[in-house]
Length: 406
Image (cartoon, rainbow, N blue to C red):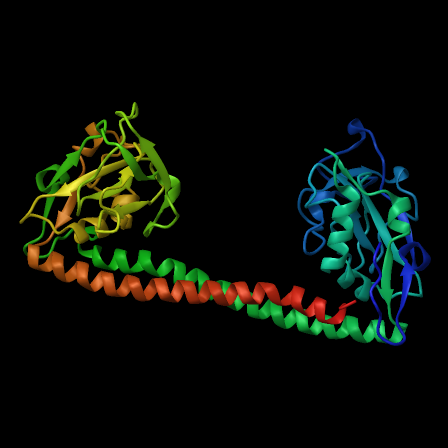
């Protein structure tokens, strides 16, 4: 490293080549490799196998044993490193081999093999630090094909405590990282459950219609019987307007800051200028993006990627319509709700054929009100779970910074 910080007592700066052997990966011709195991062949890892761990099972290639020297055979404790890649995020990436395995790495990779002067677990953790990543980025900057040179890697400076301290740090970090990993998995499960909750709530609200036996007072109607389709139309205005396309709208409505458009004459595009309380959904199948035009969105322009419906007074509550458009009953095109012929985006002709279950007006209001409260609580739970997961994902870097604060 170019700038060496002050080390704790007993630590020293050492060059990587002083404490490790650097071994080049196996070179071979394309015609010599196989994608399945054959007698006399051994597996070779490539850059894609170097992840947060060393992936020994997926996307392997196989080459003849006689192409691999004894030194190039991986041993437990070896650290695989990507030396060349088209991506800066991949070049320099490392992962340790934590068990015995017979194989090697390819020509665009290398092996860092520790001598008795350095603990492999300690060094593997150091390769995860921000110090190393910053050094790596400087070496590979400015080229299309990102490369690390073995001569440069050999001269890289690493902070090195006494061997007993290296082992203690490696064991300590392994325990801490294992605890973080357990917490991360638990947080991921919690986050997944929180993300799935809105769909479950919507599914429960429309379960009577999904069962095929409608409750008393419910009916199946065409959407055009209770709503008016708002056709895209040219606009004419002067000044600035907020403009929403499908990228600015999420499953829960407007999520991103819209673009601002300025027109002094009629726009050439037939964008939509939906009225208050109209409900829109993205025409493309599978996007699950819906929006209710409330007071905050009134006056905005929406792209032709949306189709808007205006609820007919006395027939359907806009919030109930929004809930239906967000539900799996609509999104998955089940039963009679949407014709099976509709496979891609929904046209105006398709929209005229859409059907939906409709309870009495009073029950619509009850369902919409209950769902609004439940979905708001679910959204808070999702945000809390994602915040917790984000904090846990940041812990490994914080732990490494604390140990390698030099």
